[in-house]
Image 1 (cartoon, helix red, strand yellow):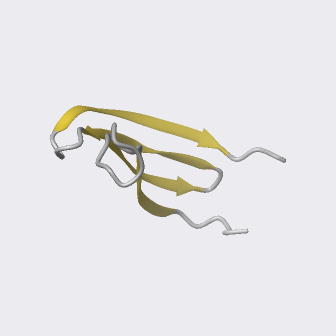
Image 2: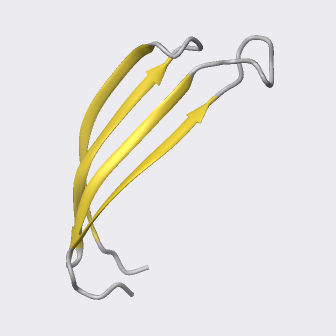
Length: 73
């Protein structure tokens, strides 16, 4: 257990798929970035996604927020 101290975090996740010529060919990729804070039993932050075409050009992007609280599992 992490205790009750507040801390910040950030992360980046990349995902994608092969291009039309199958594995090894360039396809669409997506970058998902999060940045947030945990304080006691609550978490909140921001999220951003960016979609790139096979040439590396941004074709879509967006932002949002998230929040949550600890649950008993």
